[in-house]
Image (spheres, rainbow over the protein chains, first blue to last red):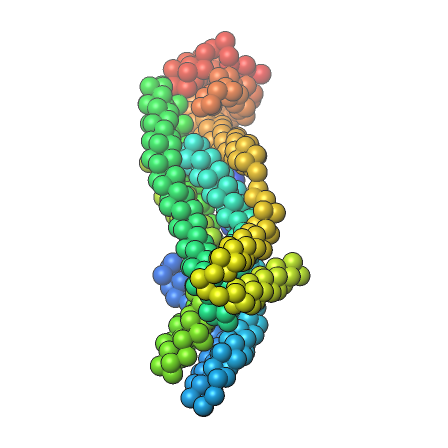
Length: 346
Length: 156
């Protein structure tokens, strides 16, 4: 009995109290929360739950997009029929057809652009709440330099890209659509070329932002990660040079706090990553389904020999593609940053 | 949204005007070329003019964010140090109490830690009933094992 009591006392002494500050990810927005699993399991299973939830909600969007595509094919068939009639009405028919197609698609595209802008804002706002938590957790784990560098890079790129999207890229998408409609209606080459330039510029801007961000994160990650790892190693060396009992206590205490902070950081990071994907996936699928259907419709319209309508439908699908790129760019920036935060020191 | 609608309508109107105007003269005539040039400039201006109003967030955002990052990491560093200090205090207290118990003494211990980045025990305040012999042994143990000099040990 005495031995048992002694053993219990010794075991009690071995327990390390983990009393680090709590680092929890902020709750995901209402709509994204609906897609997220109630009980957390593994990352892949949680991700699968989010994807399944988003796909199951896609039915009305698919129906609406299909309806518009069928209408577009109907208009194209009508134009094709009218074109085959005798008389010099070809240009008028073409113009009316382009205006009809443009007005049909503009409403849908307008709502998708609003959806894209809202998603970008929501992702950016959630990132603003999540990043300080991850920064503090990584700093508590010993990554003082890396956490600061990661936070600065992600927040700056997030702010610049968000303001760039709302102030420059969205107006450019409208500009692109206006040029497409005008180009198809008047059959002016210069407008089509300008249209191509706007599309190239938007794509280039998004690509460059992502390249610069990834490059910057990669370089600063290596430099600051090495600095943090060296600092931790130096601290451990200092501890090992102390009186054995004090060194042992210090080592156990710091290990307990660092492990606790690391666990909380990874939990917050995994939740944050799932939340970011949950915010992004529904608009991505909504826009993506329209993008694919419009691409398909453009090909079908091409079969009827009405080039302008086919080109205009293609331009609208390109606009959807640009929107997909914008929403995904913010999501990718946050995801890369969260993965770097979770990777931690070293 | 109103601005974007106005911009779109403006561009479409400009495109229509340009298309009509360029159709008026013949293809190879001199006025035709001039009209095309003017129409092109007019079209370009109507496209580009709203973009001149675009204002991206200033570079000062970088310094603000950098300051925020420093504040967050400093606060996290402080809280980590506090957590580590608390554990060290408890473990050191437990160590001394364990030694005192083995000497048959019933004591209460208060540890003082250094203000360094790595907090280490620098002083101790001990109160309770203890025999002079046990006190001497415990004092030596504290000095040897924990590095707290006898001068830094306060016995009440």
